[in-house]
Image (cartoon, rainbow, N blue to C red; front, side):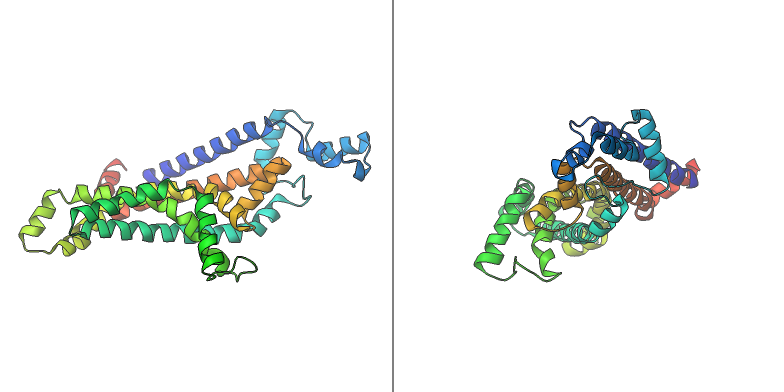
Length: 314
């Protein structure tokens, strides 16, 4: 078991290092210079020598290999550098913008799980084939719905038409309702599809036929025997989809005007603030790796066969 855990942690570290390296190379290859964009403004009145000193303070003139080693060393010590545009530590910017995104992502993922389980349960319990087909087509509709269009549609219906949720000066929880729904709908679609397929597959297993032969009801079989076996593969896709929430948060936060990591990413792209973008990429990769590592370590808890296999390997 210990070899399994160490191996997974090693793979997670390798993925995180690869994400950092690839993002560093791509960000350095971007055209333009964030320092020159900001400090060459004539209103600042800075001369060439002063701008050169500023570039030296940011280490912008060092060779790329030196910059890479220096950035890696700083990140390992928790120093993410300074924002070229804001002039404050990048870590402070991320901490200031993290709570809205964290709430949005967590609540959006939980709602997507609820939607997926509801659709899968309705599909499995449906007494009519036509109704079952209609329910199974809903995830395809969800996944094909553009996030920005869904957000605008929800604002139009619930804020402007029904006037249930204010879009101007909403409360802290009111401001999250529509963004959470907007983010959860497309994420719930693949979860529901995988869960439906797993339920259909498990229902064909011999132990299900045995349970039914003993007189168990369809609902009891679904709850007692099918649900636990069907949810295992869904854990993997759930961990992967949670890592996509930041990409969806960028659009969602822009539509609803939320100040989170998504909005910070958008502003940093516009300002070519490389230090902030690098930190956001690494933070997102670390969250993605940590979530998937947790899912991998939870698999043996849900599936005793994996515990036996890993125990034999160890």
